[in-house]
Length: 137
Image (cartoon, rainbow, N blue to C red; front, top):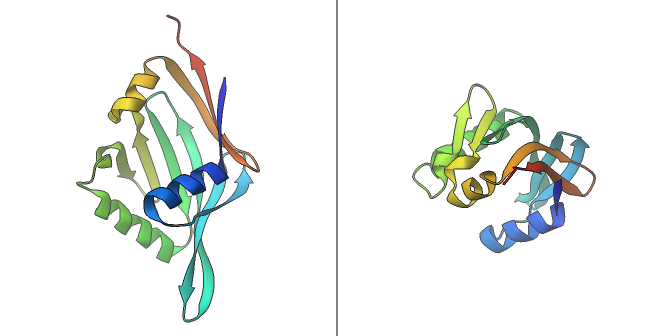
C-alpha cells in the first residue's frame, strides 16, 4: 500500500508552522533537493541540500544529506539547537552527514507502526511516497 503526500502539502504545513517557504525538486527515486530562498545583499539566492533515503526499517529511517560545507555546518547547528525541544529524541546524528529518525519514539507514529510495516520512502516529480504493508490482526 502507498501513502502519498505532495511537496505542496509539505510546503503548506511548514509555512503554517514555521512561516518559511521551502522548495522541493526531484533528484531520483530516493533523493530530493530541499531548499529555500534567502535574501543576501538585495539579491535572492536559493540555499538547499540533497536528501537521500538510505535505509528504511519499521522503526527508523536513515537519511544522508549533502549541500556543501556551509549548508552542512548549518544543519549540524540546527540539530544542536533542536536538542531539548519536543521530538528531539527522534533525531540522531551519525557519522558524516547522516541522520537517523527513530519513528518509534513518537507516540502517534509508534501507534501507527504497531499496525503497519514500513517498506520504503521514495520520491517522484510531485510526491513523497511512503510504502507500507498492514500487519495481520
